[in-house]
Image (cartoon, rainbow, N blue to C red; front, side, top):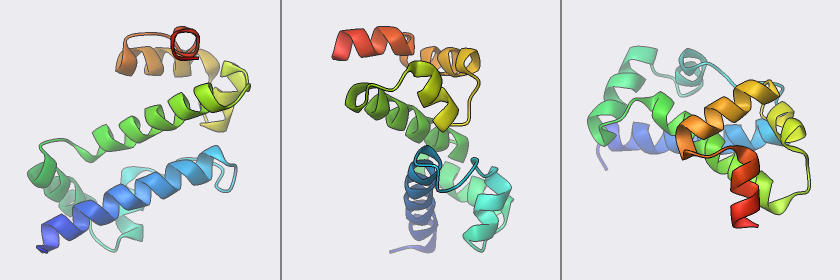
Length: 116
């Protein structure tokens, strides 16, 4: 495996675990990209350039996507209120709804109703 593939794979694994840890209250907040790069022992620029080269997308795209996927899972698998899910994901409820709708085209409430 090429080093660039390894870096990208490590990043994707890291954010998957990190989003779960935040949602489960193990970690209090999401790390900024430069802190994730530090944890992966590479520079922020190298992480960004490598993930973009390997995938065509900025690392933030995958970070946001993973947060949305976690939110969707929580909406479908729990009875938690949307406000509580937003809080678990460190969002203000109104900002969370805007973020969710930007990614999915529907509100969290609409998502829950149509997929329940």
